[in-house]
Length: 254
Image (cartoon, rainbow, N blue to C red):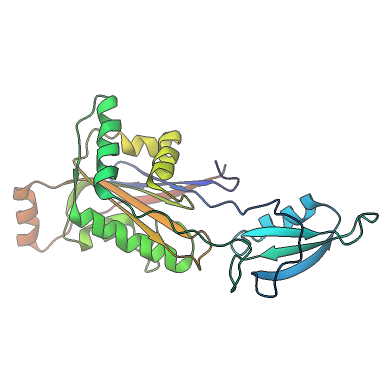
């Protein structure tokens, strides 16, 4: 698990949980001066590679990796080059993730549920769209959160797609470069795994957005939900009402 993995818990209806997984910067690059445009945005004098690593960790949203240069091995001083992975010749180039295959994601998800004796879920275009919108929003401000930049919760975003629900739960993450990795991370976290193995959901949606210029590059959003029955939905439409949303948030530290 990456060094700056964080966890969050938010509740809607019954419960909703999310994982914020941040990509760890790359450390221990070979000692070299690099090109003039290799992504180095700051240099500092340090006395060990560990000191350089600590500087990068402290600036994790900007720092993709470090390069240490020791000009005189008889002296402890080193040049620490903090690198953001950008530039014409980046020392730590960004690698885009493989495209998200929704059919594979659905199959993996249902196989996992079946192994626990649970019924399968179906792919929902409305939940996919709600997930996509939120993943794009997270990528735009470079962080993983349940709260959208407009203050919305996942229940708001689901209902904006015309999906009225009796239960909806969301997992989010940032930093993982493949569906396999993010799915495994969610399984390994008890709270997020609880969302994967809910026995009261029927629909599923998921999205991945890649933004190489953002802090964590990859942003994932996943929803599981059960729609209201047709009779209740029609009644609410007739009344001009939307189901009430009760939400609360709690941050959990590692």
